[in-house]
Image 1 (cartoon, rainbow, N blue to C red):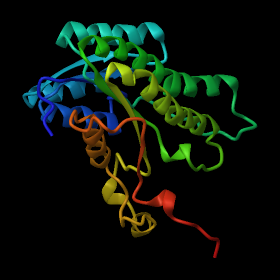
Image 2 (image 1 turned 135 degrees about the vertical axis):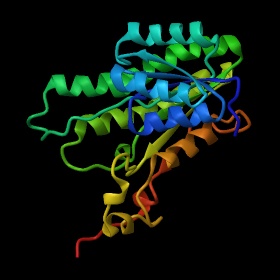
Image 3 (image 1 turned 45 degrees about the vertical axis):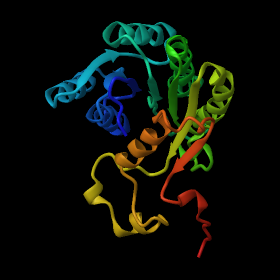
Image 4 (image 1 turned 120 degrees about the horizontal axis):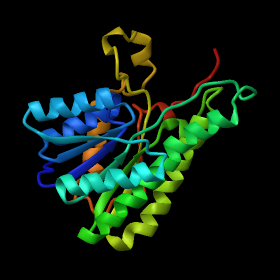
Length: 248
């Protein structure tokens, strides 16, 4: 898949899946805008893309702040004159017992994960429709579908992203803007070699996921030839959400 002459925005691009996405799109010819609150790692990642011959800029962004979302789009347009693809990847969690989860904790997670996806989508869509359309991919999580204890804020935000995705797909469809969602399962972004056999074997696919698995999903969803695909939640989890668990 070739993304030459396209501009891609990746939020949460300072590390993990976001870093991999930004590098991968640049390798396929796209001009990439990396956005994150972490300016040190964000600038370093943009630098690495440029050193490798790609086109990239970093914009420090708190996606939960409306003014930052607007500025991100304005700086993207200034740098590359178009917005073709937006990947809303920025997100984090606060893992606390529900009895200790404060309103401030809840708001912080929801503002970044869900409000941020809405704000960036709204502002990107304004520019996309002027140029004939585009593609938005929201990164949710299998935690939108199943949970562990003490994950209320994160689970709610990711469930909201899944619902936001199909709502936006309907609203933006007339403007030729496709909106889809990827729900990663266990994607190891740090020490893959330190994983145990039991970690891999609990997945029907036989292994824990890698960032490249999410990259390939996003490539598919943002390829302009796949223009009949919108409003979906693509689960990329090695089959874990289809596996029944019983206590021995």
